[in-house]
Image (tube, rainbow, N blue to C red; front, side, top):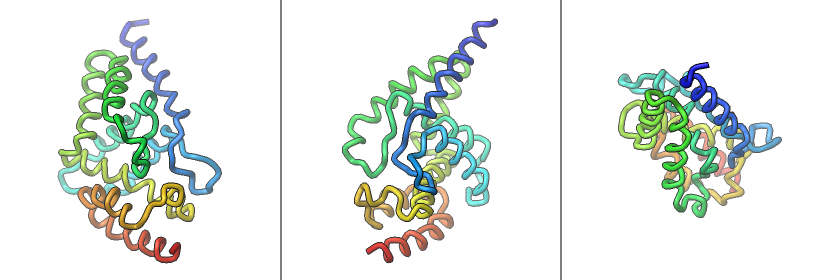
Length: 193
C-alpha cells in the first residue's frame, strides 16, 4: 500500500475519535449529550438545507467542507462551550496545536488544504467562512429550543447572552435566519421567566 494511502487511512482512523468527544449540547430527545461527530454531520446538513439563507458569494460545497472539519481539533482540545467562560482560557493555543497534529497526519497537499480551510473558518473573514460560522452557531439554539431550553439553564444563559454570543455571528452570515430564530428564542425566554 502506498505511503499516501497509509497517511489518509491513519487520519481517518484518528478522526473517528470525534465520536467520543461529548459536547455540552443535548439531543432533542434529552437522552444524552451530542458528540462532536454528530454535531459536524448535523451542521453540514444545516448548511445544505439552509443554503438559501447564504449570500450570493457563498459556495455551499466549501461551507460543508469547513463544517465537516471545523471541530476535528476537539479530539485533542475538547469541546469549548461558548457559554462556559472558564473553559475558553487558552483554548486557541490548544486548538492550534491540535490542528498542527491532526491535519499534519495527512499527505502534504491535503494537510495544507484542510488546514487552510480550518484557518479560514476560524478567521471568519470570507463569505464562505462567515456563513459557516453562522450555521455552526445556529445549530445549538435550535437544539436548545427543541429540548425545552437544553443547556441554557445549566449555564444560566440569558436572552441577552444568546444575542451577544450567537446572534451577532448568525446575523453576520444569515440575517433572515437569525431574525426568525430570535422570535422563537424571545418567546422561550419570556415563558421561562
